[in-house]
Structures are given as structure tokens and as C-alpha cells.
Length: 118
Image 1 (tube, rainbow, N blue to C red):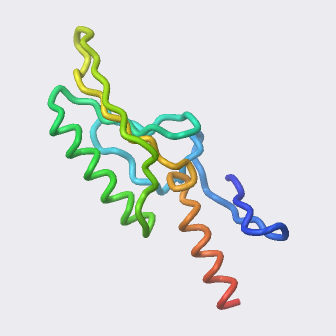
Image 2: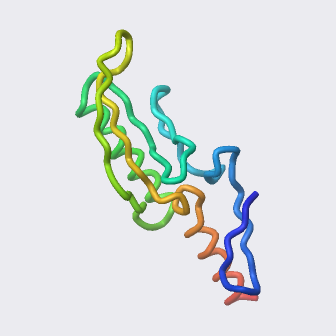
């Protein structure tokens, strides 16, 4: 659990996992893809085929945008390669806003709805 301050007198609880992202955040489906645990939250998609990695990144963005209810703040897209034996060649990272991946916009909307109705 974490808290998000909506103003000086109130906080909103966020249900986060050990990596600090929402437990409800859609996870990348492929076993080689992951949400990493650093402050700007790279979400990584690795594959030997660049279009496939980009398609999986786009699919993840669509499902996360649907879950979030608004566009995900993608700070940057980083493309690298790994020519090591047995590793996928392409490494696509979407550098995403940490608050989006924690579900803060959802919590803020839910809090606002409760404030209006209650």
C-alpha cells in the first residue's frame, strides 16, 4: 500500500505490489517482457524481431490505456540490442510515468467520485 496526497488534508491509498506499481496494472503477456523497478519505470519488450517487439509494446499500451482510462505518459522510448549468445536481439523499453503505472489517475478519479457522492 502507498498513499497519494490529493491535498494537504487528505491522502488516497494505492494498492501497489513489491515493485511499486498497481496490483491491477496489466502485465506484458510475453515471458521475456517485464515492468522494471526503477524510478522512471521502463517497461521492456525483447525479441529477435523488432516489429514483433513493437507490436507487443503497442498492445500493452492499448490495454494499459484502457485500464488507466487515459493515455499513459510515456516519457521516452529506448531501443537497444543485445548481440550476446542466446539473448533476444532487440530490447525496446517504454519509459513510463511511475504514477500512471501505480494507478494514481484511477485512484484520483475514484476519490473524486466518492467526494462528490458522499
